[in-house]
Amino acid sequence: TIKDYSFSDCKELTTIYIPNSVSNIMSNAFSNCISLREIHVVSKTPPILGTDVFKNVNMNDSKLYIPIETAAIYRNTNV
Image 1 (spheres, rainbow, N blue to C red):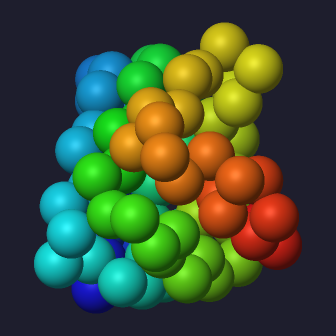
Image 2: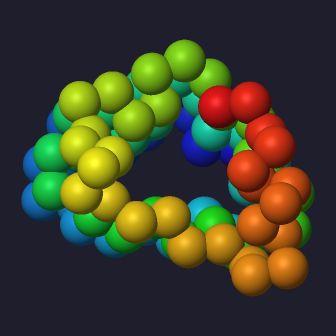
């Protein structure tokens, strides 16, 4: 689990790697990480997201990397 506000306001953070061991990302974990551009998730199961996990992160300028065989699973997950 990545706890509430764990990386909030890390304005220089550009890339994150979410390992298999993370099943939950709590509220505002990466809020205000305004430089975040790459999110790598290696788990075949999407983590459960709290509210506002990526608040004030420009998701249009960010890329999500997931295992290719899991694209349909991630696409069908409510985020």
